[in-house]
Image (cartoon, rainbow, N blue to C red):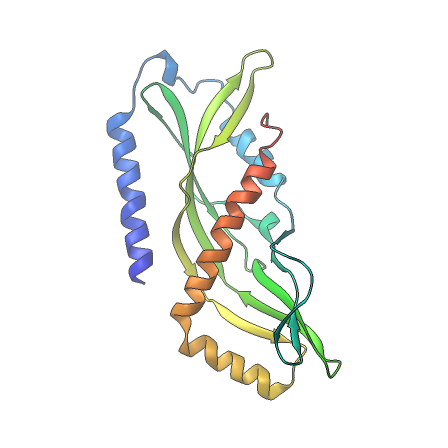
Length: 211
């Protein structure tokens, strides 16, 4: 809760600072710049699955191995609220707020020497974030070119729960209890894994640069 409040204050500060730094000369003219189309094309490039870290199985402790991690559901991210274009010292910028779908999750497979296998998943109801882009134009083709400037600031993550698939009912109930008892630890795990990978997905989507 405190982290969400701090993030919200930070986002508000960015917005106020942007207003003070904005300029009104021709270099800050957004007329005929299709920001909506550029953002829609960017989001359309987000993958359903994004794999990160080593993908081979490695022992966690005797008899139990875990495999590679991935984020699922980034292709379900959508805009939250209006686009916020502004300028800093004549440079066009864009503040973009996004929200995930309830399908977005962190997941890693597990397997036991007994033959049991399944997945460990960290799920959420939704995550909202805000981030910044530089807006340029490809003058030869009049296309919008977005560059991810960051930072990516978390606003809120709600409904985090740890799920153990492939295990028995007792193990599932125990994991459910851990979700309630260690909500703060789950928030840290989500933040440390989700946001760096979100930034990597944005970078990959912008590799061609022209949207």
